[in-house]
Length: 264
Image (tube, rainbow, N blue to C red):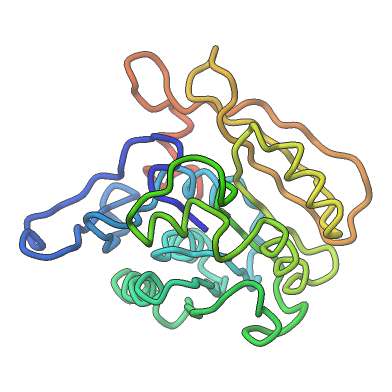
């Protein structure tokens, strides 16, 4: 479930002129090509979602699911960059599910994105089994007893495993995927072993891994992992992804992601 500002990264550019008296802002990606309604004080997506969308292997004309879709940023990015895909986003929070539908319509993808409100633990009642080529997931990063909980309900559910646990997200991913389908996740680097162990136990063999570092000489803050349902053991460790260069400017690779050019 995407969590605005999980990694302390900068918020995406936003334009408050048309929404100065509302509870929302409009944020943009891809040099203004994509626009998103976002809560002014509640959940807001962060760079994590863009990193995940860039990392995941997307089948050209496949059906993709995004578990814990938040306000729909990942479905919109995937649909924009892969014109033959159909994306289903699952979100437990009603307000965010409504906002995700509005963002799909705002970007002209209302016919290619379906947003379902529901809990991953009830996935068998929400979607068909083994119908998806790929699943993306930005799950809550913290256990219920870990760290300070935000008083804002949207942020609290997005950041902590209150409604859905990592295991429940992985179980849902396996349920949705076809044999040899792929599930990609972004998670804190400090919990990398937990993630890899849980993926293997869920029958989603980790096959690709990339560590994310804020700066070249900093410890990893995030890990991107992709597993294959029914895959054989053996993992490819990719080169590190560096978010910032000197002066808090985005690295060329990350800037290309934000501009949309690396995903085309």
